[in-house]
Image (cartoon, rainbow, N blue to C red; front, side, top):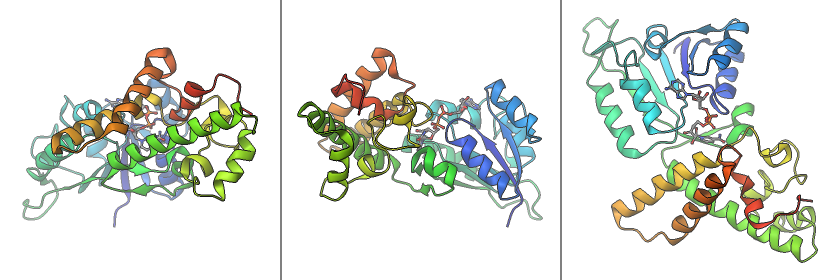
Length: 279
Ligand code: NAD
């Protein structure tokens, strides 16, 4: 049982997750390098701290939701990072929900298990660290229905390839004269149905409330998908597994980023195939 939660990284996902913790009545302390975000939370009356270490000092549990491995390493091991106190830590549980490479997660988990909890009688209990990336995107983050897992890179490889497949098929259909809405209805009661067609459709105007219906803003940035595909490719190489589709998807997302769409939601790949306006 715990009452105080520290939250570090309040972007598209983290802000929604932290807001749910606030709604549920937890005492939340936050930190982000973005001053505008910090101001927004202090205006809401939420306790904001200048460094991850200060968040750790105030929290029984700390959650990080940061872009990539380098940011997570900085927040844990950097000056005034979560582990700055040396071997004595206040939080009993550190949860990293960012999608990062398994090697970094393992390294951090060893550093955490070498620490001891500050306020225990015998001083020999170690804090726990959880590698707990999430799936479901901003819609699930807002609704409080994210899936927590330890297999995130495989999940995102599958979702990247399914998003490419759905986008390519919808672009072909539209070019043949079938509207994306009609084709989506057909997919969703046929074997093509998947998350990219029924919950996160890439064509503007087909579904309300998803990034494609708001100019691909506020979702899962293409540069983050590019990062995850690089992680998948590196893992596949490490264990010697053939991964031709990872390679293709990597190239497509690299091109999208080079063309200036790196901050747009990854479903903007639809426009890689189709230059019309959508529906
Ligand atoms: P984001 O870029 O919107 O948010 C990241 C936040 O971290 C920003 O507010 C940024 O200012 C902050 N930040 C960066 N460096 C920092 C530091 N050193 N200290 C403190 N704050 C720092 O990213 P996001 O879309 O919220 O994704 C976060 C993680 O979740 C990524 O690893 C991503 O792959 C994963 N993810 C995202 C989605 C999605 O749909 N957006 C879904 C599942 C998983």
